[in-house]
Image (cartoon, rainbow, N blue to C red; front, top):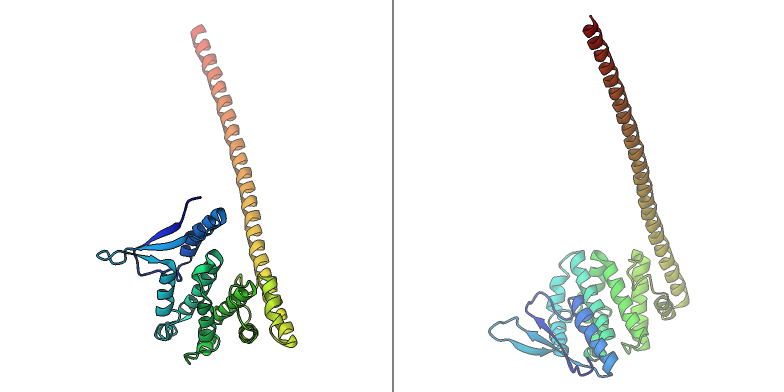
Length: 286
């Protein structure tokens, strides 16, 4: 690893790309981060692109991300068609946001500020006038909650150099969707106390206080659900233990019964032998 200068991953399918599949940043990105940690150098990342078997090529990771983002997540035609789908289709947008965040954490050099700014322009400010907010509200408000939470977390961690206006716009949209639709408690939305504080700090005091109450309420419901599941599991385990105990008792009873029958059978056999011997001896004497 000390002499590693590049990381290469094969690609033979059009069904996934660097931004659309989390395994790519997890494995390719994770290996790249490991090399940088050990050597101090950021290795160049490539795809061995075999999607066209007659024209195989090597494609740089950053180029691949640029091509994929421009043809999908930043493409108004693609966005329009995806928004015709239902909840699962809307979740694809939040998945790409998560994967972008993952790449920015694993290999910051392949994610430009331009991409984060375009996410803001398109999905917060509705640059293409596609009615993004209304469509997410109707079909999957929790996807947009997560997307806006990811934008805020990227800014909080210094990945996205957002302006004060951008932060305010994103935080307002995020808290609005939490207030109107309850919190969809993903890891970004409910389970990050520092992010919650950061979001609340970028809206007015009243909105921030209401937002924290909404999150606390959602977390309490989630905790209650978890406790209910735990209670159900414990009851099931207790019932299984009781059933096992009953089964053992029944087995012991059957064993005792079987032994009793065996003893009776042996005694009966001995008595029969004695009676037979008695009659045989009597016959011999006569």
